[in-house]
Amino acid sequence: MPQAASLAWLLVGASLLGAGLRVTIPPAAWLGLIGLLHASRAMRPVSGLLLLWPTLWITLVIVRRELMPIPGVAFFGIMGLEAVVLTLPFAADRLAGVRLGGVASTLVFPMALVSAEFLRSRFMPGATWGSIAYTQYGNLPLMQIAAFVGIWGITFLIAWVASTFEMAWSRNFDLNLARLPVLTCLVVLGVVVVGGNMRLVFAPTDRPSIRIAMVNRPVDLFAPGEMAQIAEGRVSPDERPRLAERLTRLHDWFLDGSRREARAGARLIAWPEQNLLIFNEDEPAFIARAQQLASDEQIYLAMGLGTVHVGDARPFENKLILVDPFGRILVSYLKTHPVPGWEAGIMRPGDGRLPVVATRDARMAAAVCYDADFPEFIRQAGQAHADVLIVPANEWKAIKNIHAQMAAFRAIENGVSLVRPASSGLSSAFDPWGRVLAVGDFFSVGDRTVTAQVPVGGIRTLYARTGDVFAWLCITGVVAAIGIATRVGG
Image 1 (tube, rainbow, N blue to C red):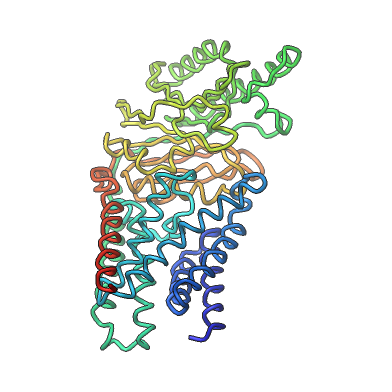
Image 2: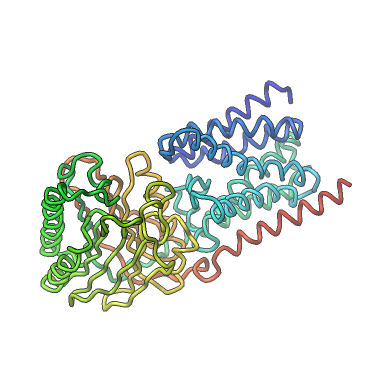
């Protein structure tokens, strides 16, 4: 392939992949990887990778500038490291994939891409953000793979189609030269798509359900930056009375809104992450009021609270408290994973145990916002046979779509209904198959309360039992493939 054509495919592939990562266009990621892999295979190994890395770096800078509000040079450095991680699977393909034959040659790239994504999620900031699997939100049959091998199965399939297509392309689509690899990939893809459709078609519709309501905060109570100031514990004695008065109005807003929704029929009412800010000395009295409300109205009340210890080095407790219809506190959970940066600097993290409690209506689990970006952490809900997972969130406008969509994969992985009240984002509810039950935009005009009828009765999944075994097998496979190819090449 002439150099100009290689560069063209490189740019087209990067543009399509970037579009898929930024906006939910499922085919874009498939086509983008095909273009990138074709360009990588056509160029010389070293010079090709030296062109690929800056192209991916520029793509990630453009795609994630709004998504990741990291100041200054640090943002560009982090994107450079992310680009290195994304380049490594192409390097593995050049090292091993082109030296192996048959079906094995098509498996190196997908195994390497899964390995890169998985290890990045475990050992780098950002959890599973940026996984190519998330670009397939809305493709429900394909998303069902997550119930068996997690999101890594989705990444694997997209990359496998790219490497198989490239093999056929390099042989001018002569099936006599690429029949077995192409047929193997197509058969597996067909089984996955048909199986995913069948899983959706035969999903039971007669399960009991619970009516939920997600209540959100008023938009005009605090001045810009004021809630962050309180969360940071930067409250002087002179400011305390004024801010305390506003917080009291906020507390009344949530209690009154919850009472209204309870009387409209809601059985579970959930509040977004850290929306109800409260000074630690005022918390016991407020909790008592909330317990009385839950008892009076016979509801479950899942409260996203931000308890502030003014003057402490880490003043902020980001928690979820779940109260049952008898007024008993079932869960008091501290968020385990602070978002790197501002929140990590002020927050007191939890102990890493995701609570699951049995109630007379369902087994309920609780996590908070960024916790849900860690599949291995949320898997505790599936292991404990939870029916409903409550995940209050608080985000910003640029990430509202992708972050809500990521939560749908956690519902599928663990076979749970997921209730996600979100401030400055999309409040949403999903069933155990990832289907949307309700969604409401904080930035829309009017009442931001969201209601839904949520099925209870969890679905047992293979992923909940075996976890990330598939990802570890991919790591083992790519290491073995490189070892074999090195011997062959030697």
